[in-house]
Structure formats: C-alpha cells, structure tokens
Image (tube, rainbow, N blue to C red; front, side):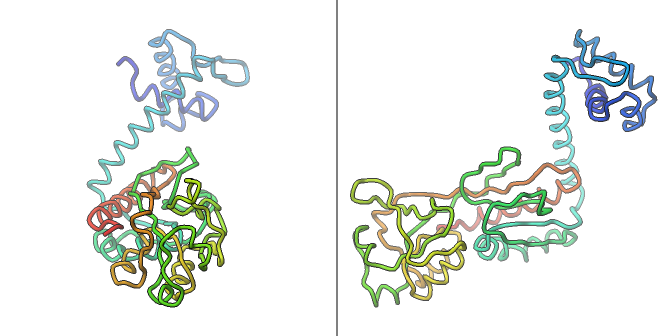
Length: 300
C-alpha cells in the first residue's frame, strides 16, 4: 500500500478545516509539512484531490470519491486502537443507557450488580422511553431497541432475539375459560398496544390463513402495563419472552395455543453513535450484556 495514515489524516483535516493552514494547526504540523504531505498523496494517486482557488479549497470529483474511502479507513484504524485500549484501560465516567421500560426492568436492572462489580468506575444513568429516541438529542450513549432497525446511521450490535407468546393468568382462564381456537379470542378481553399497530399482530393464523390482527379491549403504549394487566387477570396478552420468562416459570402466566403459535421472534440490538471518548464504556457494557444473556436465554 502506497498511501500512509498520515497522508489520509492530512487530507481529511484539510477538507474538514477548509485550509492547509488550519489543518496544519490541528495536526500540529508546520504549514509547509502539511502542504508537502498533501502533495505527496496526490502524486502517489496521480490525481488532483483538491482544487485550489484564491479563497478556498474545493474537492475534485476524484477527491470526493477518495475522501469517502479515507474516512472509512481512518474510522477502522481508530476503532481498532480503541478496542486495544479498552483491553488495558478500565473504563470510567458516565454512561447513559436507554431502553423501553420492560427491557430495562427485566433485563438491564438484574445484571447491573455484576456489571458494577466488574466496572466500578462507570457511572450509569438509566432512562426509559417506550418509543424510538434520537440518541444525540437525548444525550444517550447506548440504547437497546427491540424489533426491526430503521436508522442506518447507528452502529448496531445484535444482542439476541426474543419470542412472543400469547399469555393469560390462571385466574382469568378460570373465570372466562381457555380458548382453544384463534376465532374464540373474539369472546375474550384482549390486551394490546396503542402503537405501533404492528404489535397487535399475534403469532397465530386466522381463518383465511393470514397473521391474526387483534383489536384491543384495553390498549397501552407500555408492554409492562400490559404485563401487569395480564397478571391481574384483566385479559389475554401477547408479550415477549424477555419480560415474561419468570412469570411463565412460576405459573403466574400460562401460554395459550402452544402448538398453534408461530415462531415469531423480535430482534434486540444495542445501538450507538461512534464516539471515541465513550467507546470503551459502551463496549464493556454491551459485551457484558451479551455475555450474561448468553448464559440465561429468554426462553428458559
């Protein structure tokens, strides 16, 4: 490889600052050294990357194309260095974590004791939002998202998947009977979500073979509220394994339509923007979550 990291850094700095003088100051080089580095890069590539005018520097078409690759290479080098640093440096400082209330209560909170024992210098700030938040606006370092991801600008680390099941309390079933066919759900109180509407698609086939879509008798924006309603015998709910595992194991909630239920799983991802100062804290926290959840699956 002919091109060096220093040359890529100089090129990116000139573009970012708008001038060779400002780039030299940023890189702690002399102006002549920065200019020579840029010239050397253009000579190696045998093309003009920046067009110099009397007032400013402008990227050529070739320069714009090369800049995209240069930034990607520099990002990978930074990430590699951060990962090595994270192995030898103990992460410190504040880490802001966001998750929907059920995931925060049933997954994140139970593992915090072990995490804090391993990383006592990380200060945790926990926030719960039921919807999708803007990480920058909410000053959030890492968020756990359930379901399909839409924001391609975020880094995503798969955490696992969680199956959804149709559940009711023994008390509710004793009072109202146990439905054995999906069509019989119309005679029961159904607990569903206010939004998104897709969460009211239950993993069953209706009479025409399509996925069953229910109209809630009681609706809520919070899965934790629906869980509480189900536990209190207020109706039948469709909830994720990560929040009902203990309820099912202890008999507080009973699965309905076990043989008819489709194997539908929600993907769970940790998402974050790339940030050098916080990368080690994010990495250690996400890796810890992955490790613990691997030892105790949601379905058990």
